[in-house]
Image 1 (tube, rainbow, N blue to C red):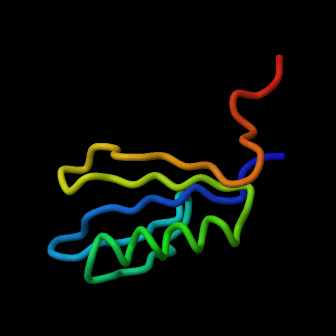
Image 2: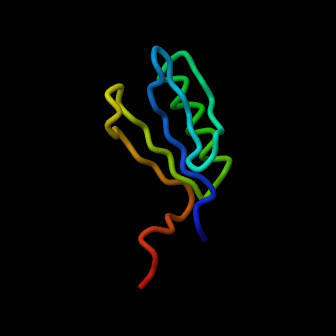
Length: 75
């Protein structure tokens, strides 16, 4: 089953955002901790999904998948 959503926690100026890949959907939060909490809650509610958390410089800090990871595909 393909993922329903891939969510990214990214810096946005002096705040943090949770972005849903392929859409304009975003949540703007004051702190990284609040954004990570929102991202985890959203990804868990939209399984199967992935959450990618970024450092303040934009590099990837952590990736999590929720439910069975469909990647790599069989074969």
